[in-house]
Image 1 (cartoon, one colour):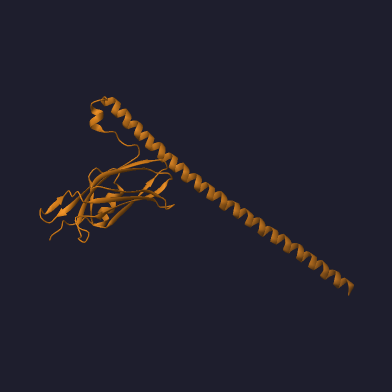
Image 2 (tube, rainbow, N blue to C red):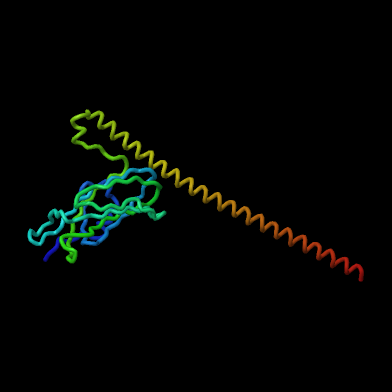
Length: 219
């Protein structure tokens, strides 16, 4: 059997990094194989993902839909280890979550069953991820709003994304500032401790010299 050639690992990683901007991202995996990628998110950010999985058919020699194929989606916060999403769905579906804390999030997808529990199947998985406010249904809006209203909505969405990014940068700056202040405080206390030790040593030496000269005068 000749399976379609898989994309190189480097190209796959680059595609996953830019998943939020790609419309036709797809990759390959086997049954019970998990694929993960990292997404850095600001806090309180809505993320929506759409996926569609096709299974390789020996008979038809192409990827086809399989109603028995299931997709497991897991999302975890890397810093805290908190599980945000763990859901099992059909071969085509979507998932949505909101990031509670800013930082890196791991988004993993896997297929946990196929046409047979004991056979290895090859799967092509299409994935589309939207980071930020969820985009409205274009077909529905086309019949209810004007082109100007659509442009204004898109502009508001971009402004909201910029605001979230600025908030995330402020949080990082605050954390760095707190760390710098704590380090400076420790340095000041260490310097004061050194000065105290030097003063104590000087006082001890002066008293020792004073007793030494007093003993010399007595002799």
